[in-house]
Image 1 (spheres, rainbow, N blue to C red):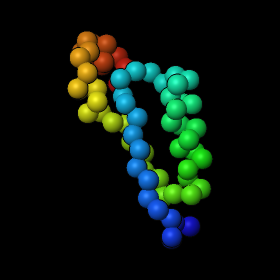
Image 2 (tube, one colour):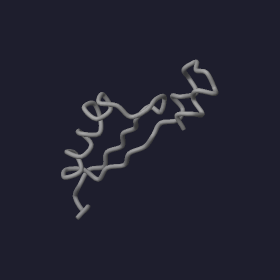
Image 3 (cartoon, rainbow, N blue to C red):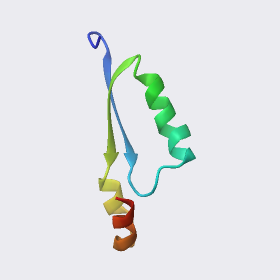
Image 4 (cartoon, rainbow, N blue to C red):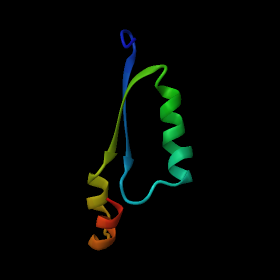
Length: 62
């Protein structure tokens, strides 16, 4: 039931593989928030372009 719920948008930086920090810092909280909010999540690709990286390594992580 989404009526009356506030919306929430959050994204995760796409510069590496999923690790424990992602789980503790974002994913665990996202699951908790779904009961209270209408949630929209994303992988924020723009961040991967604003940080200098080796293109070959970035393609491996995609």
